[in-house]
Image (cartoon, rainbow, N blue to C red; front, side, top):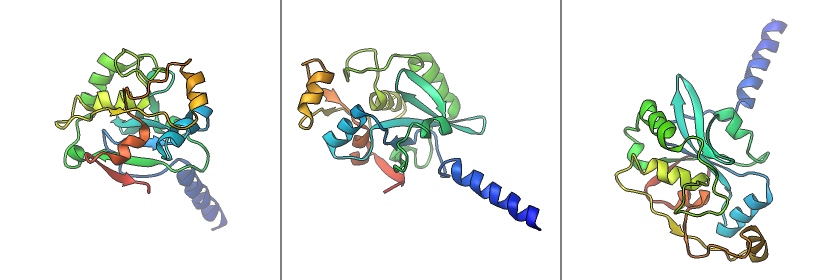
Length: 196
């Protein structure tokens, strides 16, 4: 009986530590907070909790996250969640168009591998070039599947202006098109699946 309790305890611990358990669906946007200076600047700028985002895809029964950090790549869900700041909340947003039917994994992966995989990270937040930052990648990727396209917003840089000036080497893209991870929270075309 004692061995049974120990095994049950270990199983419960493994399930608890393996990350949140939700009904993930292709196209869900997963939002996390990362622990870095740029991450804090992003969160402070738009008053949100999140500084990084990825998009969910299921492949052969496993959940993966397509993301752009150092480059556009596919990570396991566990690898992606390890990027999150300890103790921070994970949020899942779903395109309302995908509530009844989301694109197949095959459709997602074919598009990802043919147009996006291995593209460079866009440290300049330039919407018009070949490089992609996290939420820019997600918007451009999901727009291939959405009838109602996600539009970029006008970026603002009001907080930490000295830091932004240093980051952008004096050419802060204030007013240029862009999209923050927190912008997914305010889109009428998305609904919250998990998180506050």
